[in-house]
Length: 163
Image (cartoon, helix red, strand yellow):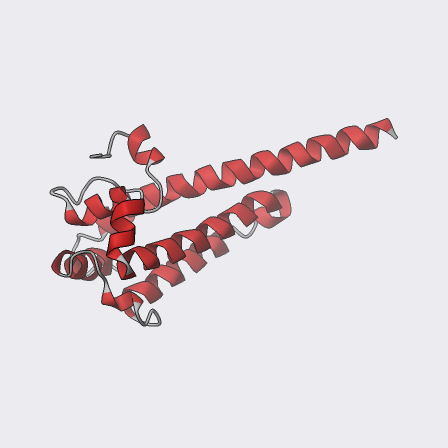
């Protein structure tokens, strides 16, 4: 009987640490993908990710952080953003068998990321107040800083924050 209690105790610990690890991993991936994929590869002509730089950044700079594409998010950049998130989650589905709590954290963070990013670009005043790093990323002097869209701790860690 005691052995079952010990196993149950460590199982709960494993799930809790998996959730924390999943959230941290998700935030790191947000930073890495934004910096190296959407800006690194995305600045190259005819790259599949060039929509981010050529369209999203252009619209946002022109319209004071507002991005009209999110009004009807079934086409264009917002659709590509969602499809990319689905593809990333699909690539991580084998984790369901090994670390279901980790995968659940990834799903939660993906939904959180998309909903917050959409709201930021539909409500610039709210975004400037609650997400100054992302505001600065688009509206500041250097659009190659502040890679964390919904978080800032990774930018602080890697010294890419201008705040």
